Image (tube, rainbow, N blue to C red):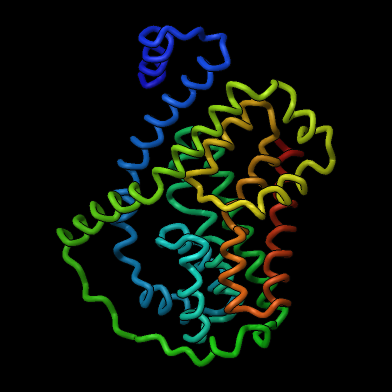
Amino acid sequence: MLKSFADYLVFVAMGLDPKSHLGAALDFFVYDTVKIFLLLTTIVFVVAVIRSYFSPERTRRILSHNREYVGNVLAALLGIVTPFCSCSAVPLFIGFVESGIPLGVTFSFLISSPMVNEVALIMLWGLFGWKVASIYIGTGVLVAIFAGIVIGRLKMERYVQDFVWEVKVGAAEVPEQTLKEKLSYARDYTVELLKKIWPYVIVGIGLGAFIHGYAPEDFLVRYAGRDNPFAVPLAVLIGVPLYSNAAGIIPIVHALMEKGLPIGTVLAFMMAVTALSFPEAVILKNVLKARLLATFFGIVAVAIIVVGYLFNAIL
């Protein structure tokens, strides 16, 4: 139905040639824009209701009462349903450390929260189907658990800036909300989220549409296809300095996959952009000493590269 609407609008109402670069690009743009915003509006509301049950204090309390490895798993899973991007998760990171939660557990959450979230799940499911969405969510959680465990085993607490240990986070719990209040929160959250991310969505879809309509069929595959043994590390290196959220990067990922890039290479690129952003590094530099910051980025980058190679080999 949505595809028929896009085709009619672009090829009939506007009279563009389906075989032209502009026609293909604009058809991609209209279809993805309508589809993504419908998905976001509908499903983010539901996820926001779930999120209303997880205040920062409740999150810290859940994680602080578990052994390290169990905490890593719970932290990674909790990152899926908590409303924190890579930058806004840093203040909560400080609260985790101050509350006595193991350092490795805090990193599992710090990785999972921006990389594995409801926006990524919704958009991946809508554009690629549940199998690709499940692969991304599953591997993202595994990367978060693995990286957190490794950092925890390295015992690098001394490389956290001294002031972090002195921060005192208030223990006041947010009053319990009624169902009506939770639904009101979900509505307001959905509106606010759409206000914040719609430019990223439009820009992302626009770039994806340009790639879809104008990029030579074999250009990207030639340099980042299966025949290039360094395609996955190259994708990660390109992704790390970029800054975007899932809403902005997934339409680009969609176009790259349609051009024939292997799924492992594309997922590695997406993970690098969402989990290892430059603004996150700048903020974390004020919380972590250089050695721990470099270790964090290095371990996550290596784990992402391994995931990319693995899925290129089996899919």
